[in-house]
Amino acid sequence: MPGSFRKLSELPLVIPVFPLDGVLLLPGGQLPLNIFEPRYLNMLDDAMAGERIIGMIQTRANGAAPDDEREPSLAPIGCAGRVTSFAETSDGRYLVTLTGVCRFRAGDELPVRTPYRQVRADFSSFAADLREDGPSSADPAPLLAALRRYLDHRGLAIDWTSAETAPSDALINSLSMALPFDGMEKQALLEAPTMDDRRETLVALLEIDAAVGDDDDPPSIQ
Image (cartoon, rainbow, N blue to C red):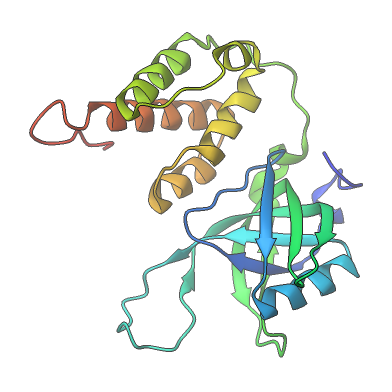
């Protein structure tokens, strides 16, 4: 795990958040970001001057009218990442990589003067995210079979040698982050309590996508 975060007590109680729908960061995963909006450039400046922690989180519908100027409500759970790569372009953009550290439950949002949002982060339910577990003993065959059907359905291709030899947990997280699932599906993968739960959710999503079009009505995940 990047940095010196070994215990939940070492994580900050308040973190800046970057609401970005359809984007997923998982513990141990790496997320490249192209930052250009002024308030998030400000957020990066402040983060780099401190512990380099930023919370990636999605939003959820709040029932407001389309012209309502209120900030959208935040999803209940996000993932804190640490800036592990940073570069500035000639036109003032920041190219950064966030490496996932630990999921958090978004608590109260602070009435801050910064242009970006900040929340109290409750990491207490996700202590396992800081542990470096050994290799998974789960059979990778069901996941690989579902992935093959998904890719065939979408007309996509991957390096199968890399997929078949990758550690199971790394493959699950990289697929969860990289595949074009919608926001609700990404949130379901994030909120899966354990890696086994995430694997099952991922396989279900792959199979549902591959089955759409085979019947009149798409299957339900429920």
